[in-house]
Length: 274
Image 1 (tube, rainbow, N blue to C red):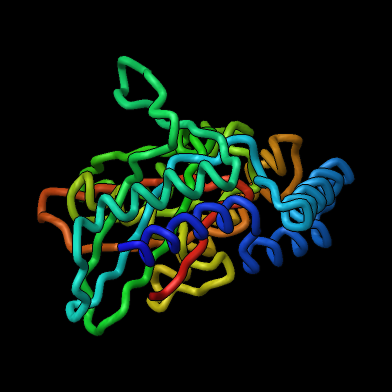
Image 2: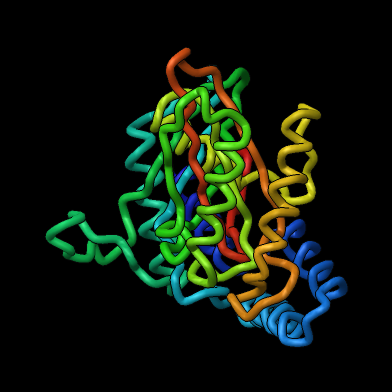
């Protein structure tokens, strides 16, 4: 249990301090390719901010997010205690020792801060083997609030899906601290689509979908979103998104659920295997 707690604590700190390599490379690419001087200046500031966070050991953003924890649990692993407790203890420890802002309230309407950023939102997946893979993805709500789910009709088809995704990014404007990462979940039920869209944010932005059809949709969406002209931090430019990742799941004959989860320019996450 202590190993899990210690690992989660470290990942909470690392995710908030260190930019993922794929995100950093995408920001550097944006800096080189941007046509707008103002947008290039924003890219420079974002990269400088990430470097300061790394070297000074501080958070990249004042909003250190609500901890979303993805766990792949091997079937051969035995845990002596409650996994949920071990994870939440890790969140408390990491946000405390890492001097990360505590942003979680104990009730959505009563709005009393828990004081330790727990509880986390935990997603558990059973896998083969004797290992546990833990990914901590702190989610700030500047970007989370710009996310959306829509229950489309099957007749809305591909066009309806793409239009909804682009419109969601457009309506968010500069609020989610672009350039954004766009996670998309299509299929399943309402909650399954939302889960897939969140999980899609963990995929490297330079990844190409294994399915050529969805790879082409991701490319088309990225082109359409960048054509919106929102640009870095909403100051205009030709880079509104760093990447678009789509995950799908079978669904009902009468349904076409679509979820869009927006990640900020940092889209923070860190993983470990124990």
